[in-house]
Length: 501
Image (tube, rainbow, N blue to C red; front, side, top):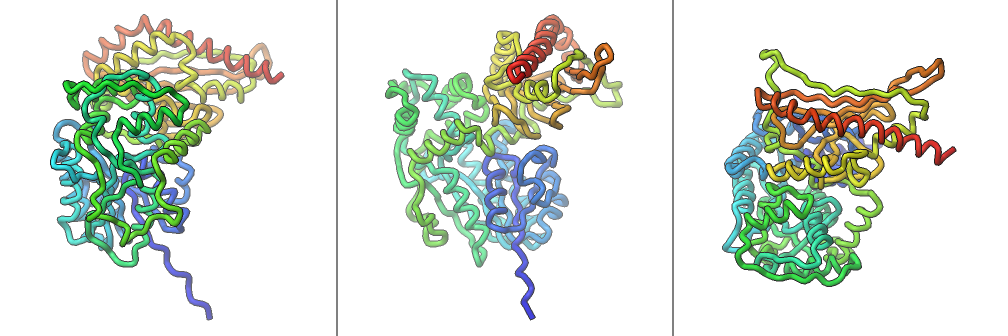
């Protein structure tokens, strides 16, 4: 008689729609764990290749009951939630969420909590790093053992830190920088972060404690930029240090030069005002040894990230997750009881072009492809958005050809994608209301012959008088942008078709 197969350990991953969380899920599945994810909206991760393999629990981290339900039957819970975009009191919000999670984990009988925080060994630390420390303290306030891993700059394709480094180096051959570029840091490759996290899920016994994780090198941010320039085939960057550039001014500057919005750049820059170096006394090596081949150095980490970017194989990006109360999402439409007003810009065309070519033109919209004309207007709207704290156009795309639900697309978010018939985008720009842009392909006839109806529809749900005034103010621009977009999209699809034939 054979013994029954051992029951797989069930793991919960919070923040699965984020940069680290999305990759950790895939890593855990390859190591044969049962994985459950806790998200606010399951549709935001439905495009992930691992989605069919996980158990999905939906809810809010502040709702005790939904957290307990998500943690039921879980052995190890990964706490990867961040609130850095939630305003000036984000530290209080993070502490409250963490305490709620700790209480729920205790009630659900969880054996281990694993938390990814930030290295904070310098006497001078930012409000962001202080909040990350407080989150760990709040999680450890319960009875469930908490293993806190603290990392510095994470280098990987699509990470906010990597995108900031890449764009600063690429776009500025000569740059004035603040003093913090000389501070020491200990970057770590995303692959090594995932190594430590996944091995933490497999520990035989629960562990409590704080452990620093870092790569094999300690160097300045300036050295990181010069290394990136060399590996990218660029000339050595000329860096002029200016002591008057405060973290606040630096974040504004980064927000203009890189795709990382100012509100996200601020905590990243704030973390660099102190030296972010692992403390040997907090080494993880005795508990979780490094990979047999050793930790990845900075040059290799940059090369791996660049190759994934160039091959369009970026698995997750910093922009994958959105905070529910980010500035560009605060303005909701008027409530239904007020007699909600909906404004639409509806345009259609019936064409005799194979549907596959039209769909390809639609799915490749945005990013380097652009928005099929009126580029100066799109650029101006993106600049205006960034000036008001929004994300602007520089987020680009994860993949230049294919889209999945949850992808960020310039200042839009992919809300629905059903190849080869429908693409629906939700606006994440600063707006006095909610906006969508949708494309649909439907069967039609043209003079008795089979054809395709191409529908392009912009929808806006205003918030109060301000929203109505906004819509009417931009109507003249819509009269230029939307007809041009549809016309050039069809022209692009026709060119694709003719190139094949």
